[in-house]
Amino acid sequence: MAFADRLLAAWYAGHPALALLRPLEALYRRVVVGKRARFLSGESPSYRAPVPVIVVGNITVGGTGKTPMILWLIDHCRQRGLKVGVVSRGYGAKPPQLPWRVSAEHSAEQAGDEPLLIVQRTGVPLMIDPDRSRAVQALLASEPLDLILCDDGMQHYRLARDLELVLIDAARGLGNGRCLPAGPLREPAERLQAADAVLLNGASADREGGFAFSLQPSALVNLRSGERRALDHFPAGQALHAVAGIGNPQRFFNTLLGLNWQPVPHPFADHAQFSAESLAFSPPLPLVMTEKDAVKCRAFAADDWWYLTVEAQPSPAFVGWFDGQLQRLLPQP
Picture 1: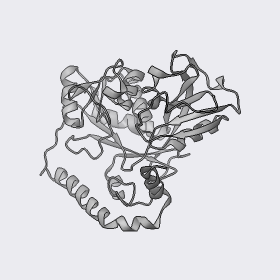
Picture 2: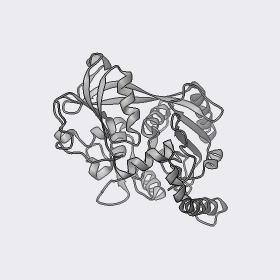
Picture 3: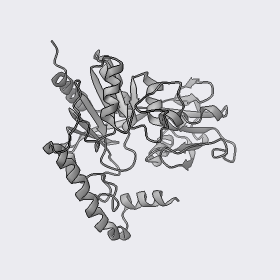
Picture 4: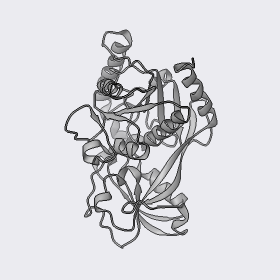
């Protein structure tokens, strides 16, 4: 297990050695709390877009289901007649210039895996730039939009926001509740009190602390042909290689187990780069990966490589709450 994986496990499972990192944690907390305070007071400038900006992010290190929720929000807003755009940091992307408008034909190396997935799935206008405020300005200059979704960026305070949606893994919660590097928190836990809504990935019902949402598998898609198959394509008990280079690979493996398959798990680091050699597993079995990983593997995929599509399903209470926020942010004439 890599050091980063061991550290992540310690944050969520607990380890006495983490106490040695508390002096660094105290320094980190002062920095992030001070940064936010400067923006709230107006001491540090922020850019306010002429259209509403909704930030979808988290305060923890590790996967929380952010990309499926972004996809749900895009579809939900479009169903209400809104023209939606997305901005993203584009983690790991190497575009020729910044900001960069992502196209479905771009490579994951150029565009970043998550932005490319979002564009290929939805065709939404999407701009990447570590400076999210610059990305928003470039996106609005390219076409008229009613609403901007900021993929991550909770801690990017140079971009003013009208709504903050914070996602948390319901099973892992906030881990040991400590900030980096002694724990998984990017900001102190009390930061949640300032968010407009907290969504709990995997919760069975809404709680006082947040709305429930789940990730439901919907189909298998062949990497080479694009053929889409129902989830009964593989029979119960099917053995297969399972690849996940996401923030919480075990969630993906558990999903496959829930479909009554027998995955041989192959966890990779989040945003990992793949090659045919790194995925040459034995014995030969069908291979199933996440959609985010698939955008990086199509060029060298074998015939029996598939990715699993998943759909975010937020609770009815969240849907009603969010529609109320849209009416507040975008009043009808």
